[in-house]
Length: 525
Image 1 (cartoon, rainbow, N blue to C red):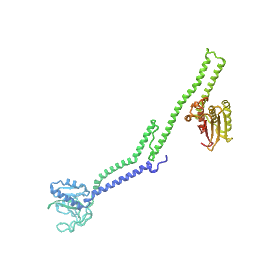
Image 2: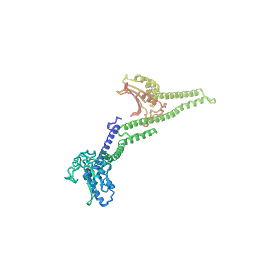
Image 3: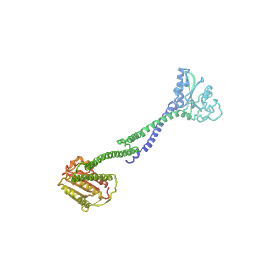
Image 4: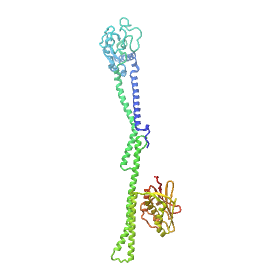
């Protein structure tokens, strides 16, 4: 499986997802901050004059209805959300503020002192920290007061009346020297007190007190939501696929070789799932091969036991007959029995030899001696070997090599053994008057050996199993054919596969069987 595309990589998904989550959280916090800022400093809190007028009007109405009104509770209920601090001072000594900690030091004492003395809320040399008028002739304004201004009575008529001209707007410095904007609280014609709003922005800690907890809890909430969203979007699918892979691995460990993990996603988890599935496929193939090998082993034991018991039973029966002292046997009968015992012994020896030979070939034992083998000479030895049997059965053998000087790189003895077995099998199943033809030719890809006979052929249902050990179809092919050990074709297949070739069995269109061996040319796999 190729490496994941970078944007599908789990590493980049985590990195991009983290950055996107962080950006989304910061953006959401920014919107919350703007909303809180507009809520706190917007509206009536944007102007000291407007704020003082609004609060004074509300309290005038409330006190007219209830002179014993708890003004502190009223202020908190109606104006607790206002960011700019203000002070309500009644002439009976009651005071209230929406943000007491936001007022300048001794602001309440200064306002009450001036209100009792009938003085305006002017700056000049007035020091609210001690509550006195304290005209010190050009004294320095306190730090909390906005800017500096002219003497406190500048621009006022004698008697301390209000300054000439219309009231000025908000913002330092004030030309009239006021340190606060005030509006009287009137119930009818009665002056009950005033509402004083300090000029200038409130101290920073007021904003911290107001915005801090909200921003902290909002930030934590947004962080939790962002983390949960990132976990669901980034790690959720990966977690599910990892759990699927874990379940598949557990099932594979329990022996279920049919389980597979999901490979979709295109990231590192998909690559791991692909590797796991490939391993599971290999294990499945090996498990199937092991089960097949075990079945073959059991079948081989049963077949070997059966094949060995037949000659052994014959040998034992004739031996016991010859050993019976009370059974008179003439010399010819005794010699016949001994001949049968010899034949069965030879058959038993051949069977054991074939079994050992097949075991060495299939187990990789023994070393092949690869050399240039002249095919024409190889065919001559095959003809010499089977000439007596061919004459006895009235079968004709034809040999054809193309080209005549064809050679093949192989183990000469093993290749001859394979062709001898095929030739013997063809002669055994060819009726009298039939023909066996062995051909060899070279193609650009391989060297082909073909053994044909004119017998009844191989039934179609038996073709897939023709190379199995001890598998015989003699009854189907020829009722008069002598049975072999059942290992000859298995040995042929083992020899050819050791040479890297293939062997197949088919039926000719005009009856007869065709066995074909293909051996790769020198230098080809």
